[in-house]
Structure formats: C-alpha cells, structure tokens
Amino acid sequence: MIVSAFRSAPSAFKRVCIALAFPAFLTACPGGGGGGTSPLSGVATNGHLDGATVTCDAEGSTTKTDANGAFTFPTGCVGTITVSGGINVDTGEEFLGELKAPSGATAVNSLTTMMVAGGLTEDQVKTSLGIPSSVNLLTTDPGGETGTGYSNSELFSKAKTVQQLFQTTMDSVAATANVTDSDAKKAIYQTAVNSLAGEIKKAPGTKLINSGNTDATRVEDSTVSDTLVASMLSNVVTNMKASTNTKLAGVKTGLSTVEPAAFSAMAGPSMTTQSQQYMTNKPATVAAGKSMAGLIQKDQTLANQMNTNKSFMSEKDATKVAGLATSMKTLVTAANNPKLSNDDRQTAQDAALTGITSAQTTAATNTGIAAPAAPTNFLAISKDAVALKNFSSTSKITIADFTGTGAKLTWPLQYGTELGLSLLGVGTPVMSAIEVAVDVSQTGKQGAFKAYISGLSAQMGPAGLRILSTPNAKMIAWARNDAGAQEIYSDLSAEVANIDTTLSTSASMMTWIPLNDALERAIVVTGDKNGTTKKLNGTFNVTFVVKGLPLRMSNQTPYKEFAIKVPKSLSISTSVQELKGPGMVGKIILSP
Image (cartoon, one colour):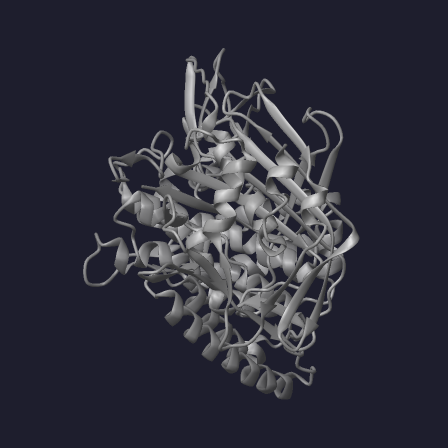
C-alpha cells in the first residue's frame, strides 16, 4: 500500500519525500518514559553528553547519562569518575574524547579532567583560568541552565574555551596524521590534556586565560595565552612521536616528518583565536551558546588546512611558515565568527583563501618546499546555503543553521513552497556509484526513522550534476514509534527506479524542488488520515550520509564522515545495511 500510494510522485522528488515523511510516523504514535534516583548524582558536560558511559574507576561499575548529561550510581561511587562516548547535545555529534573528575565530584567536564588526567589542583585550574575562588569546580556544571540562560555564563565560556583547545588539537593532529580511528583520537585528546596541564604546572605565572585590561570582571575582554597554547602543541607532537602507546601507532607514522615547532607555529594562532570566541562572544542565552558550539566545535577548517599544508611542517625553522599561519588564522576566524552573517562569513572566507594561496607561495620560497595544490575536482553547495521560497517570500537556510541550533521552518508549509540550491563544481568532480542514508529522530521521543538508497549514478554535464537510477537502484526504510513498541519496514526500491534529475552548477541559477507536492504525498505514505503530519512540531535530529560524491564546504573543507546503520528487517537487532561516508548532523525545528 505504501508503494502504490507513492508511485505517482515525480521521480525527482521521491528521495526528498521519503526522507521528510517519516517524522510524522514518530509523532503519530504514543510515547513512554521512566526515571530513578541514586545516592550519587552528577552531570557530564562537553555540551551535556547524552548516552555516555560513566565509570566509577575504583569499582569498575558503570552507568549511563540521560539527555541532560545527568547520571546516577545506585550504590554510590568512591574515587575518580571517567566519562566516554555519548552524543554532545550541543552539536549532535559523538564525543570522542574522555572526561574525568576527582573523588567526590558531581560535575565532570574539561576543567575537572585537567585535575585528574593532568594532575592539577582545583586552585591551579582556577588561577590559570581566572575563575573566582568562590566557584566550586567539583560541583558546578558549566552548562547549568537558569531559565533561558546559563547559571554561570562566564564559567561556561571558560570551560568551553579549554574544551575547544582539546577538541581542535585532537582534530588537527588526526587530520595531519591522516588517522580516523576513534581510539587514536581519544589518545590524542588525552595527550592534549596532559600537555596543557603540564605547561600550567611549569609556568604558574603565565595564565592560560588573561583578564582584559579595561575591566577584569568582563570575560568578553579575556584572551587566551599564545605562549601556553604554542608550548602545549609542541609538546603534544613531541610526546606522541615518542609514545609507546599502541593506540598512537598510526599517529606516530603520520607525524614522522612533522617538526613539533612547525606544527605549533601553524596551528597555534588559529587555535587561540578559535577557542577565544566563546569568551569574546559570551552567550546571553543557552540558545546562543548552542549555536556557537554548532558553528565552532564542529568546524574542521583548521584541521583541513593542517592536512593540506602538512609538507611545510617538515621545516625546522618555524619562522619560515609564520606568514602562512597568519593567513590560516584569518580563514579560521572568518569561519568561526558567530557575529558574521552567513553571506559575510562566506565573503571573508573567499578573501582568506586567496591570502592562503599567496602565503603558500611565500612559504615555498622560504623553505624550498613545494606549495600544495589547492583542492580541485569537488562539489559544494553555493555559499553553504539553500533557499526556501513561497508565493510571498524567500528565505535562506544555511548549513550553519542546520548544524547549529537548527533550521527553523513554519509548519505546515505554505502551498507552493520550493527548496532551491545551486552547486559549485570545482574542476572536474569524479563521481562513483551513489549511496545515501538518512537517520531522523525527534528530541524527547523514542521513535526513529532510517532509510538507505543505493544504485544511483551521477555525471557532470553542461547543465550541472545529473543523477540517474541504475537497474540496481534500491531503497529500504525502517521506522519505530515513540513508545519503541511498533516498527515499520518497507522495501521501496520501486520508488527510486526512475530517478532522473539535474542539479544546476551555474552561479546564476538554482534548481528548485517543489516541497509541498512531495510532502502532501508523504502524508499518504505514512498512512496519516487524521492530519497528524500537519500538526507536527518540535525538534528533529537529522544525520545524513552521501557516498560517491566529492563533497566539500565552500571553503574547501571536506564534510566529516559519519556512519548510519539501517535495519534490513522489522527487528533492529538483526542484520543492518551500514553506510559510512561524508555527511552532516543537524536539526530541523518545526513550529506553527
């Protein structure tokens, strides 16, 4: 019945229909829940971590965090606590590092991690970060909320600053060494914690965070110490190259030609500026804080530049690459500045990329090392944004919106609403067989929808990117209701048998997809006879993966890789179809 009802949909829209249809199924069914208490309660924050594993180190007992990062040990815990895994609710992405807290702590975050893993006292952390002595770091959650704001916004900003240093070090080292293994990334994260704590111990008079000169109480005027960050990065590379940790074996190989001082000189300026954004733009609301995290914490611009310019890191004289480091800082600042509009951010990044090309030429002259070629043969969404148009207005939905607090849509859509996008084709993009997967869930619900499409091909032509079905085109879809008690599984291969659509790569032309037609048919697909879909509202978490297309952001940064597992039957515990590839994690917010 699902197939026959949907067969009349225009072939170009069928993938859009299916991906957007099943959130209705999640809402149309009843939900459920539960709760409990314990002798020891705490909260894990890197952005609050949902579903993270919390271990009482002395006993080996474990528990899980809830959607607010809260956890409980039914029989208590004596000793240190370790937190790993889980989803960062600020970014929607998996947490790949490891957090720790001392005995007696009920708050676990980047600051308590420096106390345990880095061997710092609470007073040493407070002194280095300029945190008032009255703040108890062992019990105060940096992400704690009061109404629409943070209960301690300055602590939030400073904890995020430290967290960003660890995160960006992990991303930059992994990209430079060309490693993707999660255990290796966790080991890099740990090395960064140890190195920063070690620098703070060695130079207690050199604070990591310096208060502003005009008003010492204003976190907005604070700056991150270039000196400490540079020393931390140099030691990170030195220590990993000398490490006997088997988890770092691939990292050691990837860094074999990298000089610690050159790595530090290249990454340091960008990292200090990037992490400082959380203080310079101290968020007034939780929504603003989450938006910043989506923009900054998920950003891979610096990691990509480190990978691209790796050849220069074999230079022993770091001063010879200082100009390139400055140009990279300009690009990263443009990509991470929350005060810029999307268009201004794109314009600033375009100018910065031109500056990087010039700086690479200068670095090549200084070092005798050939400058790397700029990335070519890739596709990008023009200005990292799409348009939403109806009969009365046109608006933009940016990637920053989607990956940050969420792309907001008024629901139901006005009749005649269309989605428009234009692709940038740089060079001659090389495509392979296309596979697509999507994973949708609604915040606060147990329902889920997953779909997998394969057997599509693509070719570049004068009009743009043409996507076609092959004889082997296949689609499967699985969904579970809010209570987790009912599932739907469908083989919808017939619905992708005749796809033939072209996405424009002209700078002056968009491809427009009529959403209303697709979504009205989606209501039929889900069997919604009562108008539940039209009453849909809330936040939907969306992950998608597209394999076979050379996708990058407009600033040349490749999309991060994710994995989606789609059940191949009514039981999620049976075999699955897994797809790994470039994609995104974001949110769609529907409201009346």
